[in-house]
Amino acid sequence: MSSTLTAWTRGEAEREAKAMFGNQALHPAAAALAGSHERALDYIRQAPVIVLSANAGKLGRTAAHRARAYAGPPMRFLCDRGAKLREVMAFYGCGFQLRALKPSVLHPVRWSVIYHLGRLPPSTLAQIIPESRTQQDVWLRTLVRWTEHCERRCGNPWLRFDWAAVAFRAVARGHEDAVTTVADMVIAPGQSSALIGPSFDEKWTLAQAEAAADRWHRALGRARAEQTAAHKLGIGFSDPVDYSPYPNSPLLIDGFDFVPLRSCEDLWAEGAAMRHCVGTYSPAVVQGRARIYSVQQGGRRIATLELGSPRQWSDDTPVPFRIIQLKGPCNGKPPKAVFVAAEQFETMVRERIASGGRLRTAFPDIAATFSDEAAA
Image 1 (cartoon, rainbow, N blue to C red):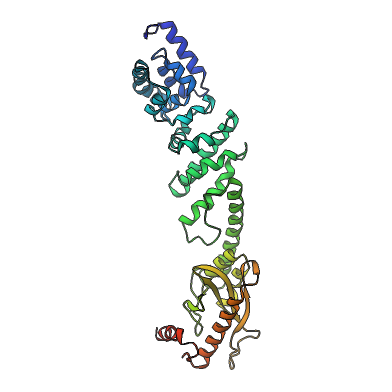
Image 2 (cartoon, rainbow, N blue to C red):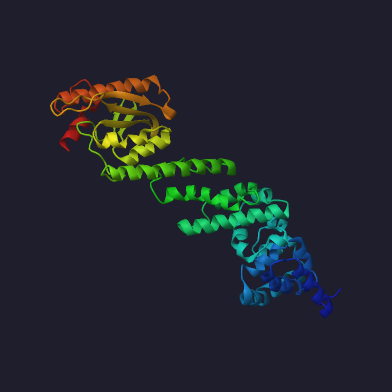
């Protein structure tokens, strides 16, 4: 058969190609491709995404102009060469695995998402493309929601896109917008000091990410309440409280760092990470009724120490603070070694106060730290 089509054959091919796509913006590209060569329609049947790629997300007159200039002529050249489907798809810039996408789910507004999907590892992409037309539609619609939300919030539409492409295969129809709650959690650490919530884990499933996002949003609401409470106390959420004569900087004792939690923000972050209520202790700290430290080891929070007094301070006779409570995660009991270190810490600060700010030689390994702090 000659490679030159008759008018009737070309017209039939163009009509069939256009009928495959419900979105009329793709009709110019479909007709231009199918009418360029007798073999072109076979390529389109095998990989409808070629038409979307040739369209490149254009609408209206721009789509028609692009179809005339960039769709038909290259396809004619490829057909004359007898190119394989993989070569044709590579020329039009779409991953070979994307041939599985149904023509009815293709739309110009989804082109950027589909283009980036084609940049995923082929083995990954082959496993995550849903089989049914309905689920493909939900999957692509959800990814578009994700990219649009991320672009509005942080200017990066492709934030965690690789993870989203895999995880959103499980999104149920009607729940496409729900993924924006996960996006908010992912975006927030890049915008602020990340007061709350776990670090995002790319190994999470969608269900795990949604559960983490739910916890994060609830914690965020409580954090805002704490910010309001700090304002009522006459202090900024991040303003530090002077702990003198108690240590204002971290101290190392028996391998544990005692880190002072001097602001409402510090207290809230500790409570969120340790899953207990120390975040509500801001009034006691601001009013000087408590001094609270995070006990850490290698940067990991182990326990929370509260120094306070069962009696109020008196103008004439201040009552030295002592250990009021020492709590691990979820108010659990910390290891014995933490108790031992905390008792040494308590004794140390008592001796410092009794000696007028000068540390006795009972703890020579940290005497220099106190001397430097007193000088400052």
